[in-house]
Length: 388
Image (cartoon, rainbow, N blue to C red; front, side, top):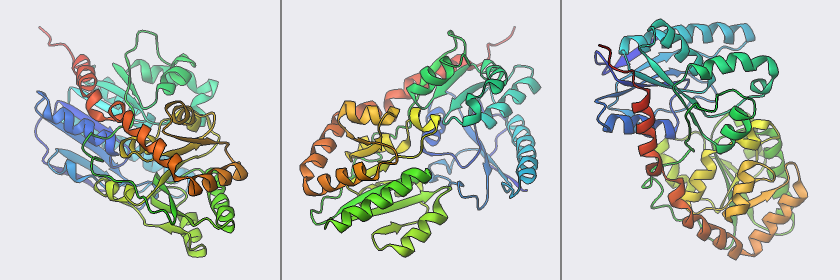
């Protein structure tokens, strides 16, 4: 239950509050705020130990002031609740010590923590709510009053998907119409994937699943579809990389099937090399409302790399993939349809080339630099006015 502080100055104007080691987009926001005329940008986050969703810390944050709360997740329901309460207390204390003007809090539990910070500081600390994912409980009627209070305490909301704003925040009336809502997709900096050259070996086809590994139904469909395609003489392989709830299942599949590989967890800096090794990306998860409306890292990174992506038909990503021509959509759980698509792509590589080429046309729309001014403006607008 250790708390570790590094390079912690007396006061840090902008602090990122994260319930894990921050993912690439949060890292870019922290670095951007640090480069702006706000002198320093810090980080307070929860190190979850050996949790299946624990992320490695990016090297880009090595010079950032930060406080790390190291605490396990817990193995039982009561244990998880107890540890989360302790974590929230320690995170709150750590942020108060850094004396920020603005906190950007990523996902709902950190938003609640930020609300407590605002109350304890008597409004001297302002907070920005960052919505990365939604959960099933968040669509229930009984949760809406509390969510309205949490979002109401925020100066602004940053949402990772346009559909989060329209199909969740506005549809469920969780934010007022005058609440500033910034669409901030999971986009990388322009230079991150500039040197990626999609794998192009005609004798085989590699489908990549890179990132947080989740979605039991999507996983089963992919494995079954590839197995069927291989029976038709198509040398198709699956490359898994990352962490997540399905890691143990994937490890077992990799031991049982020669066409499945699992390279383990990776750091942010490893991503370009991983994308160099695949022909296609697969982003079909499950039938939850969140997966219907979210916009994953995998999609934005695929566009940057010029790698076509397979998404679930009817989802926000599936609609984008088909509308922009940067990928393909299949029915969730439809093994026959996915197998037919993979066989067609194996024999007709021009389809992959065409979709990859179209991805390059939209690359600028999915670069972090396009959102920098909006992020800095949102932070500046959240800064408390000088009294007196």
